[in-house]
Length: 405
Image (cartoon, rainbow, N blue to C red; front, top):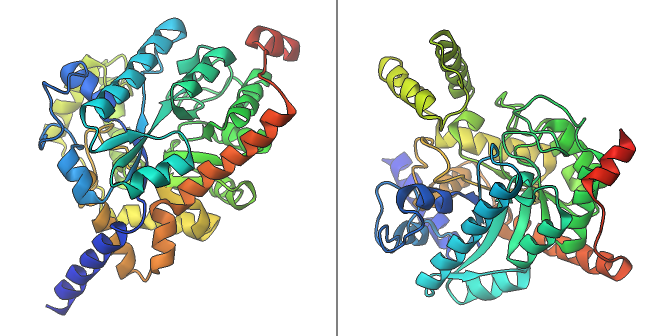
C-alpha cells in the first residue's frame, strides 16, 4: 500500500510539474501516419477525437502535458532527388493544414521566443524537422527554402546514406561527411537550423560535431552502451555534448532501448533471410511485413519497458550531464512501444519514474524542455553571428566533392 501511494504521489507530482514547464518532444511521426491513414485528411481522421489507430491525438497530447513538438516531415530515404523534395513539401504542408484546422491547439513556431509565447498562450508550439538529408536533393538552395518554410532541424541521413553523409544503418561510403557534407553543416549553422545526428553513423556524428559551430541535436536516439543498436549514441560522442552545447533526446523505440528486442529482431531477420525474403530489414516492405506478422505469432517478441527508457535517460545524464538530455518519443513512427509508454499521454509516467529515482524538480525541468530550448536558442545566436560574417553558400556537391576525390 505504501508503494502504491508513493507511485500515485509521484504521478501527481509529475503532472503538476509538466503543467508549469514546457515539455518538448524531439520527434513525432503523426504526419506520415496521416499520409498512410487518410492522405492527410484531418476530416476523415479527426485528431480532436481519440484515435485508436494512432499514438497521437489532441486529448492524449493534453493529457501528456506536451507543449512543444518537433513534427517529423519524414519521407522514406529510398526516395532520392526531386521525389524526396516533393514529398517533404507535402509533409510540411500537412503540418500547416493541421495547425490551421486546430488553431486552438497548435501554432507554428520558428524561434525559441515563439515557443515560449505559444506555450504561455496554452497552445502546442509546432516546429518541423526534416528526417534525412535526401529531403534537400544535394541542394543548399533547397535547404534554405526548407528553412523558410519552417524546418528547424534536419537529420543528416535516415536509414540510407546520402551522397554526402553516412547513415548508421548503411555501408560507410563518405567516411562520415564529405566536403559537401561539411558545407551542409556550415550552412545549417548559418541559417539557425539544428544539425540532427539521430540515424547517422558514429563517424558522421563526430565529423558534424567537429565542424559545427552551433549545438547539435539527437532528436530521437538512446545510448549504445546500454543497447547495441547502430541507431544509438556511443559514449565518446555523448561525452562531447558539454563542449558543443547539444542535447540528446532519448527515444522510446523498443529496438533502441532493449537489448532483448534487438536480439529478437536479429533472429527474426535471420529467419527472414532463410525464408528468402529479399528485404529482411525493410520493415515497411509488404512481403517483409507479412513475414514478420506470421513470425511474431509463432515467436512472440519481448516487450521493452518504461524502466529501460529511464535507464537510458540516466545513462545519458551520467555521461553527457543533466544539461544535455531530453526526450524524443518517436510516437507514430513505430509499431510497438515500451510497456508503460503506449502513447503521447505517457510522459508523466516517465517523469514519475524518475521522481522515484530521486531526480530533482530542476533536473526534470531541464530534461522536459529547458535543455532542448537552450540548444535551439543557442543555435539562433550562432546564426545571427554567422549571417553578419557571410552570405549564403553557393557551393555544389559536384564542385566540392569532385575537388576532394
